[in-house]
Every structure is written in structure tokens, then in C-alpha cells.
Image (cartoon, rainbow, N blue to C red; front, top):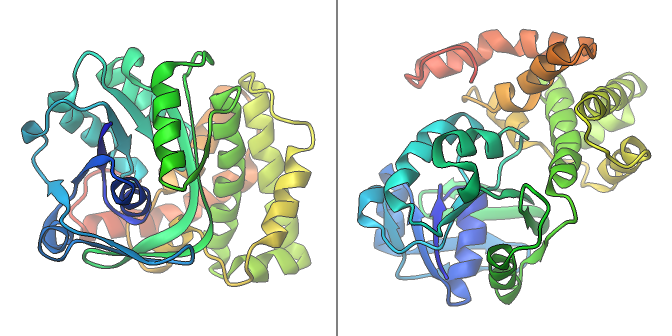
Length: 316
């Protein structure tokens, strides 16, 4: 397959690197010093699953030069989804399909609005990784995992081809029976730990071990579940309990990526992870007072971070 990885950060750098290492034809869309380092030194990945280097690397910041693309993995931050979709248009052939590996649940619809629903699959990943320095990806935790699937739940050849590519690369991957439920299960986890982590600014181990913040965590999980049910997403009845149990297994010092961005004063996925629950709660008349409080509490810093980075608009 010819695969484009749009965004070569912690997610795209790791998964794209594994695909390239296994022999897939991978092109990275990157920019700035990170792009320069990739072209000069290759992609360096330090991983708990084994370090590796991909050199040379196919990478560019000009999507108009990339042709004959089978699949595009969208691995940008959530606020860049619409911008990425517009940049993908020149690469889009009749059979090209696009898979977002994002933290929220809105990316498939955002991409479909610009690219057409027929080109978009659902997707998600699990990994703790980040850019350690330009051209260098650090994978620090979690078993890397990818799930992909058609939005209409059918089992397609294109999804199976991408699944096989990941499996050949040694990445744990699957096609769930319903990708929408899988997306919400991931969202249940990430939005809750991100919310509590960002407002408390302590590690998972700290906030899950304190009675007061553990109660907040459980409330965040319950409210996200309620919003999902209101939209007809039939998540497992025990999903709150099983997700809480999973959080208890994670290393004590774990931080969510959104939390890390907030703590470092960078623009974050506040709108996609927390703001989205507030918006959907209002739409479906589901009270979300905890998420609303956290969202509004973090908005001033988010706007300051975006102003410093020269980004327009509130938090999204």
C-alpha cells in the first residue's frame, strides 16, 4: 500500500515508522524543524517495544506532490482536522480512504464534511508517545494499538488491507464490529483522564488514589457514558467500571497528552475532548456540570496559549 501519514508527531511518527520499517510505502506530511530532521537524519524512534530508525524517509510539507495514495492516516492535533482535510484534497483519488487516529469522536464527521463520507473510515489508537526532539519520537507507555472500521459497520477490503499492513508491521490492530462504539470507549477513557488530569495537574496515580478526585474521575466517566447513550451509542453497561479498572492498571506517573499540553502552556485538545461533551450534553439535554466547570476553568489559559502561538479563535 502507499500510505500517507499526515502529522509525524508521537502518533504518526510511531505508527508510520512501524509501517515504513516493515516495507510499506509511507510518506510523512510534516513541517518545520521536524521535517528538516526527518529528511536529514531519518526517523528515530525510541520505544519500550524496541528502538528503530527509518532512513531514508519520504517526507514533505507539500501535499500537491504526493500521488497514487491508497490510505491517509490523519494524526494531527484535533484542532487541525479541518485544515488537514483541505490539504488532503490534492492527494485524494477515487479509491483513496482516510482514517483519523484522533482522541475525540468528531473527526470522522469533520473529515467527511470536506472529503465526502465515502472516503472516510473511523479509527482510533492507543499509545503514550511524543516528539522528544525534531526527528525523534519517544514511545513511553501503553501497548500500541489501532482500530479501524467502516462507518456503516460493513467489512470492507480496504479496511482489511490496512489491518494486514499494521499486523505485518507488528502493531496490534483490529476491526471492531462497530467502530462508533470503539471510538466512544476510547473517548470515555481519554476525555475523563484528560479532564481530571488537566484541572488537578497531577499524575494518574495521584488523582485516582485521592478519594475526592477519584469521585470526580468516576463522575466524568458516568457523564460521558450518559452523553453517548443519549445519542444511541450502545456502549457496554459496565463500561464505566471497566474503564476505571483499566485506569487503575496504568503506571502511577502517567499523564494524558492534553494534560501535558495544558501544564506546558501549549494549545491543547480542550475543545475536542472536554468542550465536545459540553456541546453534546446541551444538544441532547444531558447535564454535564463537571465537564462544563473544567472546560470553562481551562478556557482562559487555552486562549492565552493560542494567542501566543498565533492561532485564531477560542479553544478549537
